[in-house]
Each structure stands twice: as structure tokens, then as C-alpha cells.
Amino acid sequence: MARALRAAGVTTVIWVTLREQRAAYAASNRAIRAAPGRWAKLEVADWNAASRGRPWFASDGLHLNAAGAMALARLLRPRVLAAT
Image 1 (tube, rainbow, N blue to C red):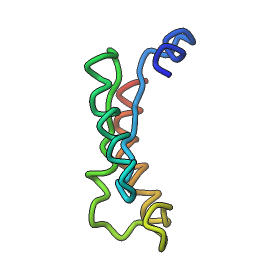
Image 2 (image 1 turned 180 degrees about the horizontal axis):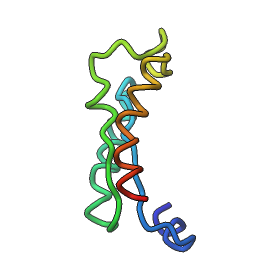
Image 3 (image 1 turned 60 degrees about the vertical axis):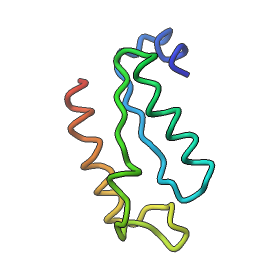
Image 4 (image 1 turned 90 degrees about the vertical axis):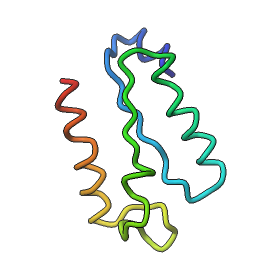
């Protein structure tokens, strides 16, 4: 994906970790956290850490409620503004 983004002229990527509600998501997060070492201008926004223990989710533990949507926006906004 990073190669395709670079080819498209994207200069900065903000990659959000997954909430580790399922075991497979931990492996994905490890790959996401390792990516900045391989790709310049890639920043990780750690949603898994920011959302841990928070009541921001529907009963499935994954999909956001209104408070969760605002929390995710607060996590991403400063990063997006800094990149633009």
C-alpha cells in the first residue's frame, strides 16, 4: 500500500491501529507499528492505546458510538493538520 501511495504522490500517511478486540488485530497492529521504520513520512495514530477501557463502542466492542467517533476525530485532527 505504501508503494501505491507514494506512486500517487502522497507525502504523509497517518495509519491508525486497530482496537485489539480480536487476536488477529494484534498482529496487524504489530505490522502497523513497525511500518514507520520502513517508510518515511508514515505516522502511527495508536487508537488501540487511546481507546483501551473507554466506553466508546457498541455492544460488539468494535463499532464506534457518538462519543467514540468524537474521540477518534480528536486523535486524528492534530495529526492531519500538522501534515497539511
